[in-house]
Amino acid sequence: MIDQKDIDNVFVNYVKEYQDINGTYVQVYEKPPTALEFLRDSVQPNRPAIIKGGFDHWPARTGWTNEYLRSAMGETKVTVAATPNGYADAVTFDPITKKEYFTMPHEDHMTFNTFLDIVEGKQVSENANYISLQNGSLPVEYSAIENDVDKDINWCSEALGKKPDAVNFWFGDDKSATSLHKDPYENCYAVIRGQKTFILYPPTEYYCMHESVYQNAIYKPDTTTNKLELKPLDGTTPWIPVNPLYPDFTKFPRFSHACPITVTINEGEMLYLPALWFHQVMQKGDEGVIAINYWYDMHYSNMLYPTMALYRRLLTGIMEENRDLLDNEGDSDLE
Image 1 (cartoon, helix red, strand yellow):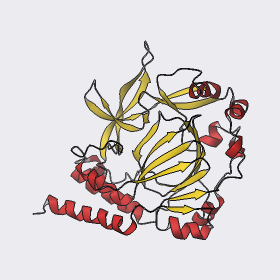
Image 2 (spheres, helix red, strand yellow):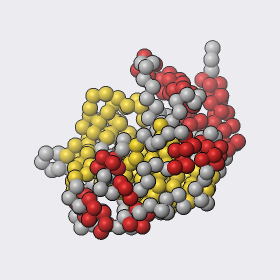
Image 3 (cartoon, one colour):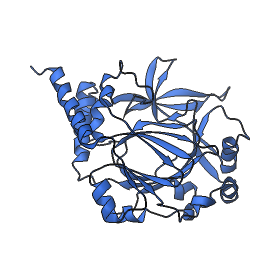
Image 4 (cartoon, helix red, strand yellow):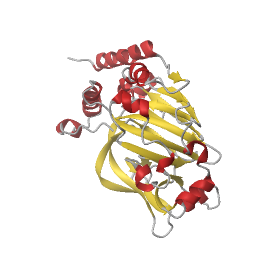
C-alpha cells in the first residue's frame, strides 16, 4: 500500500531540490538585453528578470501626467473592476452562505475623468477601483494613448519569434491587489508610474499552493444601498486560496515548503515574468500606479505545460478530491 507520507516526501524533495539549485536569484539587466541574452539567460531557464532602461524612449514614460490623460481620454467610457476588499478574481469567504467562492469583481463603467477623480480623492468611493481589463485592453479602450508606448518589446519578440497576443493598461492604487495565480503567458510588465511588488513562486511549487475548485461568484451592487454584495453563479474555477502575506499553515500546511521570491519594480523598470510562475501583486504610489504589460503566448510544446496539467490532475484532482478535473480530460486551462 502506498503511504501518503511517502508521496508528500517525494514532492517536498522535488520542491527543495529546485530551490537549492536556483535560490531566490533574479537576473537584473542594467540595460535592455539582446534577444540572444534574453533567450539564453531568462526565457529558456524560465526565470524572472528585472530590466532597467527598457522603455525610456516611450512618450508615456514622462508624458502620462493626469492632466495629459484627462485631455486624451477625458469622457471616454472605461471598464473599472470594483471590489469591497481590493481582491478581484480571488477566493472569498461569504459570511452569509458560510462558503468560499471564486469571486469576480463588479465591472463598473465610468468616464476616465470620473476614475481619475476617485484616484485623486475628488470623489469618494467605498470600493477599491482598479482599471485591470485584460485580453488587449490598451487598443480596445485606450486607443487614444496606445501610440505613446511601443506595440511590442522588440528584443522579447525577436527572442520568442512572435508578437504579443495582448497589450494591457493597468491603473490603480494601494487598495487593490492581485491574488496568487499563474498565467500561460510570457509577461513583460512595465511600470510607468508608482511601484509594484510581486511575490513570485516557480511552477515547481505547485504542490505547495493547495489549489482547489470553487463555485463562481461575482460582486453586484445592491439595488437599495448600492453596496457591493457577493452573488453566487453557476460554474466552478480552480484557484489558489492562500494569501502569501498572511499564510495559514494550519489550513494550508504544504505552503510552508514554498519559498517566495519578492521583487519590487520601480517606476521606469520592467519585470519579465515567465509563463506559469505563481504571482501575487501589490502596488503603491501617491498619484496611483500605472503599468503596461505585454502577454506573449507560451510555447505549449514545452514540457512545462503538460507537466503542470499532470500536477493539477494529481494534486488538485486526486489529493484534493476534485473529481471533475479528472473526468474532464479535455480541460487544459492552466490559468
